[in-house]
Length: 227
DNA sequence: GCGACAG
DNA sequence: ATCTTGTCGC
Image (cartoon, rainbow, N blue to C red; front, top):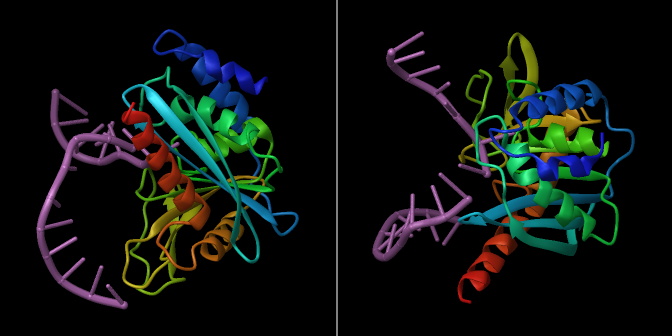
């Protein structure tokens, strides 16, 4: 399907088409070992001001984890926030933010779930399948799945199990700090996802690419407010 | 019907 | 996500 079609979906008018698209993308999504070590990773996050949405994609270079470039998109969100349908609210802005990057990322990291979702299609899996790009979901809280509290040290993790399958991991990125809910999005597996998240979060709880995108989107939002 | 529920 | 101050700790 054409990625741009998600731009015109409305709720509840297009609920049927929304479900069709989810089913189609769920069929394309693939959980496999990462082919090559990612050199360019993009962290994506968004802020809101009523129905205005500010989405940012921050590109980092690995293994040095150095910031390379940022892409900012400010527009309007035409879809409401509904648990399980986050992709339709933020997806359109994500497409625009990614288009603004000069270089093509070989891995996308989202602030949300990968396959740890009711339909196995959290925003990371959805965008990954839509763009056929490797992606990882790194959420701050749980959507679905059961788990045992991971150990207290950075690097400790526990399986995130949903309907009898390991869909991700609850990962401690910092000693004695709340863990992250990591799950693969597309063209990567659970082990690879945990590995990448730990590599991209050597200092803070969340990944540096996503953190930078978050801080910048909030900064742009504040500037947009004062005018 | 009740409780859960990414951002 | 957003509404919001101070405060504890590195």
